[in-house]
Amino acid sequence: MNVKILYLYPDFMSLYGDNGNVRILERRLKDQGFDVEITSRTITDTDITFDDVDFVYMGSGFESNRNLVAAHLAQFKDSLVKAIDDGVPMLFTGNSYDILGDKIVISKSDDIKGLGIFDFNIIDQTEKRYTGDVVLEDEEKRQLYVGFVNRAGVPKGEGSLAFEVTKVIGNVPLTRDGVRKNNLLGISLIGPLLLKNPKIAESFVKIICERKGAEYKEISYPHSEKSHDKTKKALLNAEV
Image (cartoon, rainbow, N blue to C red; front, side, top):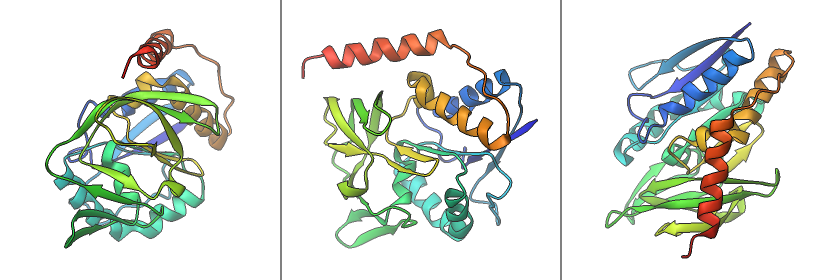
């Protein structure tokens, strides 16, 4: 059985080893017995559709690249929204999820229009970057997620943000982060996310199996699980 992964803008949005998320998901899906096809789309493509894909991924990029991608992807918003409403699993890591909000505020007179799928804005600044290790609490799934944040802006509009920030080691001024709708997850964590957070990887594989009508096989990934547990313990015990 074939699974099709759509990797959006890998040439523009793939900093910090984020392409590792695609490789990790590919490995897990192959372990489930699927044949995995990875296709990509970028700003030179005149048509992007989401009708026949099983998973969509976009990673983090330079802010200038993010802004270009936001303008390009806006042409295909209707197809993207339909796929989200249909429950297609999607993952947007780092600052790629910025474009899912209403706008990105660069300065008082210069805004980048977002897709408006979620009710938040990103407030960018240029004097310094926000960097640090972060622990997020997923209250819905009763899970803690860990990872690194490196971004120029922060989201404003906390009512639409999915996760509570419970620990920061660094200068990241976040209290909440990330978005969730149906099977879409957007989150600031980078590095790659799915290695340090095997429960997120597992949840996407389970969703794909269910949508394909395949039985999910329980498979252990001890190195990933150990990495998550070790990082979580170190961050929670660290003095701020």
